[in-house]
Each structure stands twice: as structure tokens, then as C-alpha cells.
Image (cartoon, rainbow, N blue to C red; front, side, top):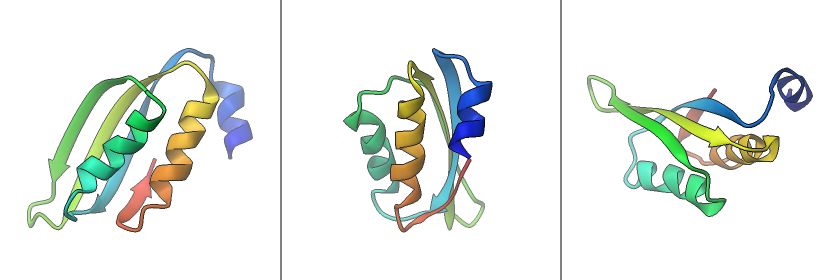
Amino acid sequence: MYKKLKKIMTFPVYFTFKIICFNKKNAEKNILNIFKKIKIKIHKKNIYYSTQKKYISFSITIYAKKFKCIKYIYENVGILKFVKIIL
């Protein structure tokens, strides 16, 4: 998957991640800490809650200078147990 994604992108680029997870305590903090670890600049961030507040949906746009930033986010956010989907 990464090879195809890397081929069609030119860097630097604005890239949006869509993350859906369970509404757990510190979910937002844990996800945003992953972005801070490699000092990725968050350009835009939107957070939405489901009607029953069981799920949280994040839409986070970053300014990525290299492909390894995007790959790092996919790998590290994807392994969090409370995350259901990352697009």
C-alpha cells in the first residue's frame, strides 16, 4: 500500500487523516502525542462525537515534508487498541 501511495504524491503536501475510535479517556491526547513526537505541524484539526458519544472521529490535516511522516502516523496510530479505522 505504501508504495502506491508514495508514487502518486509529491512532497511537501497537505495530507488529511481520518481516524475513528472508541471514546476512551485520553484518546485525543494519545493520538495527538503521536503527531507531536516527530514534530509534525498540524494544519487543521476537527473532532466530532457520535450522537451517543460512543465514538470519536478525528479529521487531522498535516503539512508533510517527507513520506516517512505519513507512514509513521499510519503505523503508530493504527496500533492503538481503541482506534477502529484510520484513513
